[in-house]
Amino acid sequence: MNAAGKILIVDDHVNLAENMAEILQSAGYAAVIADSADTALAMVADGGICAVVTDFRLPGRSGAELIAELRRRGSNIPAVVMSAYTDDQTIASAHGAGAIEVLAKPVSIAKLMSVVEAFGRDEPIALIVEDNRALADNMAEILTAQGFLAVVSTNAREAFAERTRPWVAVIDFKLPDATGIEVALRLTSRDPRMRVLFVSAFANELRAQLAGPLADAETMEKPVDLTRLLSWVTRAFHDGHATRSRR
Image (cartoon, rainbow, N blue to C red):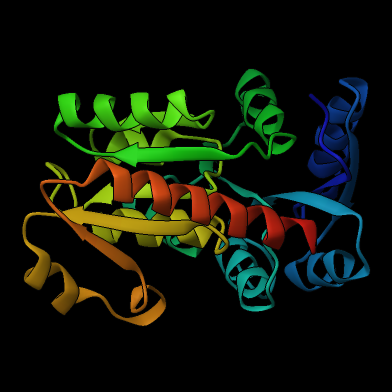
């Protein structure tokens, strides 16, 4: 599925950016290039850009700073970072800013195409992040029976590996490899429009830790009332559809 708009390749090595743009164009995507974060910001502001693939190291602002500035300006377009330096700090910085993925340079064309393919999808997905597999599957079955598309992740790693950007997420507060709050912050940095519902048997502890962009996030105590859950998801999808219709 082709993305609706142009994919912006940001790299101060212009020959590399042009080569990547040509590869995308040969696959049927519209692609343009920029050699700095500031130029990229201006091009996004002009409109017509549907996604950004940026080098991490750029003159002036870094690729992570570019994504963070896009989010600060209210842009929800998906972003991917490329880097020859895939150390933990670089990866954490890119993901923290809102990158869907960090691609190691030299970039695998097959992996690039796989990531780009996801740019064209804006499906109304409900992501369930819950390490109790039976409960997660039960929630997914109820949502699916009502016509929703539900995806299950049993830990943070699986949730972060999702290249789609869910419209809503139902997230357990305590996961084996991260807190639900950490998961929500990562996912909402990718797309601030995503609605979050936390579920937990530790409601007081959860609410005490909600702050910043998640201060007003909704919570539901365990055992989960599945009727209330369905009502929340229905309302969240309706609100999400209205928000996306105003783009």
